[in-house]
Length: 246
Image 1: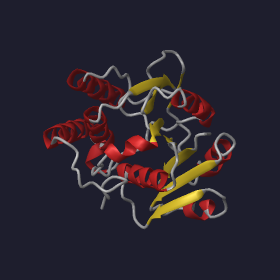
Image 2: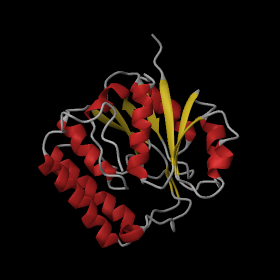
Image 3: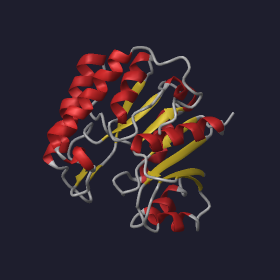
Image 4: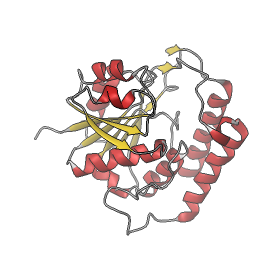
């Protein structure tokens, strides 16, 4: 039986990019979901002019909360694989077929993009603090969880939808991957990386709030990781598509 793939794109105030990204994405996968995380610009208006599925948060909840909505949608609609990518043109839709190819090998539960697996294929340079924090966090995950990753924070991924039931994501913001990786380790998920291009079109984009300070951001990531490790087993009473994020 042919497998069904859903591409999910979380957006927040992406009127500059959303039309072009969707035009390229829909050429490569028929089922596309956009999670509009409370945009206040013209993003919602532009999405209304398309044929893609849209889940809209009435207010901005955060990156992690947007992925929870994507997880729920994929599970409720019986997709086999969920592919996630960003909408700021730092993830290239041309790589979607590669994610599908590796996913359909049926050897993995998460196929994670890596901007650092291959060297020399870059467009723009990430801010030094972002690269340094990514390196330190990735090293911590490898040492503590026995992973062999090169990029802990790339949002370009493919998830086996049947594996999503093991997630109970309660962190709504950008630290969500730290919780996700611990839960993936706990569930003994099979993880692989594939190389994607390193693209930084706008190095001045902000995380917001305290996360704009590199020291605070790093401490927050470590705190989320340690809290999840101490939390132990994912609660058995988690909802079928993961915990709702307020």
